[in-house]
Length: 617
Image (cartoon, rainbow, N blue to C red):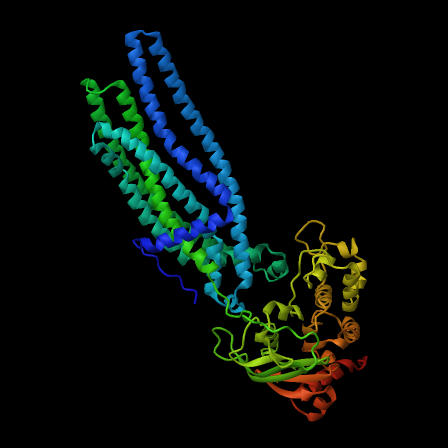
């Protein structure tokens, strides 16, 4: 599903498609800066040839004026030297201006690309996150690949600029013979071949080690993140993770340095060959000057053009090589940007019911997680009447939380359907469906935001009404501790940033409950809503919940019978199937799976309650 195709080094058609797409991506992001940047490149490509040519004219004019002793010839020479200086000044000034344009272009494009990547990460199917290939691709697309679009543009720009300069230099060298420009190019070809070879090898190594780089990120996070700090210290596993990190870094570091050593050795040999070619050419022009078949101006021009020309050819061929190597990285980025979600809204969505009058129905639903051998739920049917509170209980792994993911359309089932008022939820717009469902997940996120910001995240409005935030907090039983915070509802929560206040697990859960209540959707789904609360907090919460949910359809997934027993209907799951349904009293009297668990818990509670007074001897 996420396999990357292998780019052949000679598949120019495939390279050209990636180049066109890359240029289109940049142009759509920063057309103005890109236009100015391209114009400056052309001017900068012409200036070196103009500088060399005017310097030749200035030197020859100087020699002529020295021999003629003419004031007008001397004046002409001075102007030629001034013109040469102006071309040098223009080249420096345009280089600084180009650097500024490039920085502005980089800042704007980086933000644009990050926006595209964030949008894609939110858009893709939930199942992608279950795939190790997806995480490898994310690492590749968010790592070096992210810097490659502009790097490729810079390489192409360098190719254009150096090509213009090289053409002007070749025109100047052709007056000395057709073989001289060829000698200039041939001397730099080994450098290109070596760059292509070693860049391809490095890219192959970089792609193969994506999983290992993710392990480095994991070890680093475990050693430095506050969520892991307590257990890292308690179980004394910091040294283990640190050793694993250093061992893996040592492996990757040695492999990377080995690639660089081989590349440097090859480039040294290539440069030696280019230097030998240059020495031969300079010896040839020096002999011509010595034999009076060339002027001092010719020697100056030839030296400048050939020495600088060699550098330009090396830079040109190097840019070509980097263009090809950077294209390899672009494939990972575009594969990520091309990921397509399969769980999507229909082309002609039906409106979500204004009021749910029938209820929510699971009809013979079977669902298997990607890569799993056994289904999480199989031929599952369930009805949640409108306006009723339904509890689902069962052992871990019975498939209870899977129901939430299917109801929210994070996944679609392999067979069966889920209906709201008789309409398959796949007929609704996904955004509208999810806006009509409030969910408290079993492990809600701790957002580093103010209390008000944390609660109002449950709604799409930019500016929530303060009294609605307070009302949601009161319903969740969070108002008591919020009033005791330094800035009450404007207090920053979490310890990631300065002046933040950390909460207990139960307090964070109440904030998440308030967020679910604030959404005011007709469907309310709670996954272990009191798992972090004490018994007093749990009882208080349920009293509040009953009044809140009386006009909403509620689904509560819980292990706690004290919560389940208060629901209108209790469904018992086992082995991914529904095995029992009824009220608490009906289920206890039926002597089934629920009754057995209930009686076991009551027996344990009774044994702990009975505490005879020990006999004193």
